[in-house]
Length: 393
Image (cartoon, rainbow, N blue to C red; front, side):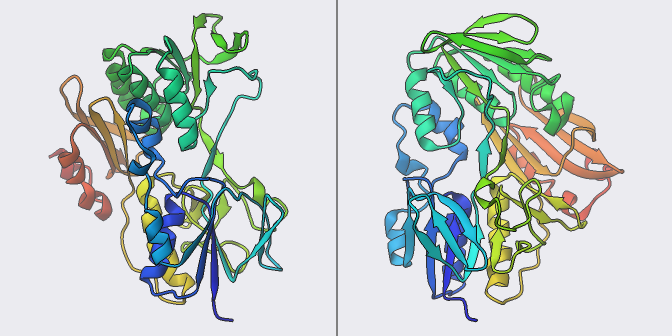
């Protein structure tokens, strides 16, 4: 049966980029984007950065494509319409209002849902950061806040800390691990990130968690796991995210830390595909891997779309890349560094730095703070699996 209608569930970068790729590949059938967001698909990385610390920031600055793009390309937008289920036999998606959307092919791009702390009471001033409206609310409250406690020093937590410091808010950054970003980049680079934040006036507290929050109607106090009590009128929970797959319960689509896919985005169910943060693709080594990087979305769309349309996927060696803006330092990572790799810090001027990651004698990745040119120069070495001696020289 020919493909006449493709439904994309999700309203972010993956949905917009996939729809764009379909039209570039000359797919002439119907494309419908179903999203629980009321806004046009927008870019999420700025939510913890520019959107948060700039008073004059406008939604248009993060909107991926203007309304005219979707109109001109005959892409139907079902905004504010959360998908609540899928019937893979009938090939229909059920929406929150009870209506259904038929599909010939379904592409799931629902991304992540931030983890919350269920024991926290419902107090004003406690935030998670997932969408534009939440970022706007946090920015509004930050304008009058005196002290913020950020729970979790991953990338989101560190970026929010930097953004709130730019607004003049006192920040306490709480992290149970020995250093920020330790589980991703290891303790050596984590220590350099700690140094960066402390130099900007952030009170970084590691090796400690949060046992509770208290207040009348709004949060006033945070109790740490060591018994310390910290005053706060703003709390941001940044303890990680999970794949947004709850709406697929009972669908028969295989879920295991995300939607399980082959190496081109096919799920266990015919005519259903997935990409982006919600999808666990089979990597070159045969292992399932879910990659939460912005640049990964474009690469997956370039592979998935041709295959869905019955063509051959492009051949390319993809070197994963991500970045994090903290103060005036852009922290960039190429490759797949792991916390237990051997780390070679080759440059460090007290603020900016460059480090190579070694695994089994080869270059596994590079991480740089404020050194974009030197980071990007290592891409070919990582792609080639070059020995670490090639970069240490």
